[in-house]
Length: 227
Image 1: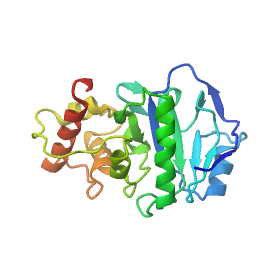
Image 2: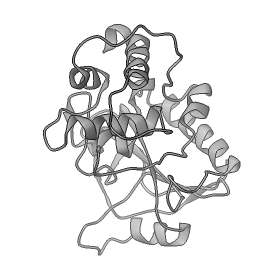
Image 3: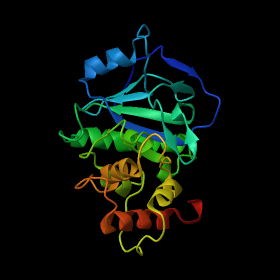
Image 4: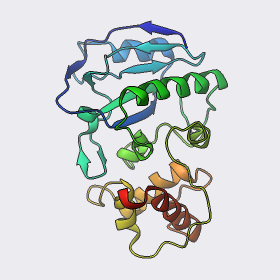
């Protein structure tokens, strides 16, 4: 894995331990992405800890012991404003719903994620998330073509295994048990759609149909007592 230092001025002191890893797509080519994420004069400054190029080259913008500004308004497992406890990786892709991620890029991503998780063991599998997970409706990255199942097979994140009993009870409460936000600024349908983008990319209509419910039940079984 090739690593290039490309320091960004956009960071702050970290007050809490890291326990979340957030994956994004850039929506811009590499050079433009680096320019935006390293621009200290923008009115709304943004950054990430890493940018991952299509050829697998990793650019380190912010040290992991500093806060990068990548998550924005966000919520996961009962907490808001996740920048303070997360590491953010921006993956170069113009739109993850439309464009596949190259094999070299995903191989480098797996290696990078393993390194990060090794340094921050509090990042348990459920806490490897996409931007769309922590900001339903507002964000859609890393997109429907992102290979979450490949990452899970490599020990990064979760993927439904199949065979769970049907979900019983309130869908919104079940989504919150897994980590998704309450239906306050968005609807339950919006949150179901975010769940589907991650775990059922063939259908992200927000309908809590039996297959979607079964996938959520499977994941809740995997996290067990931690839910």
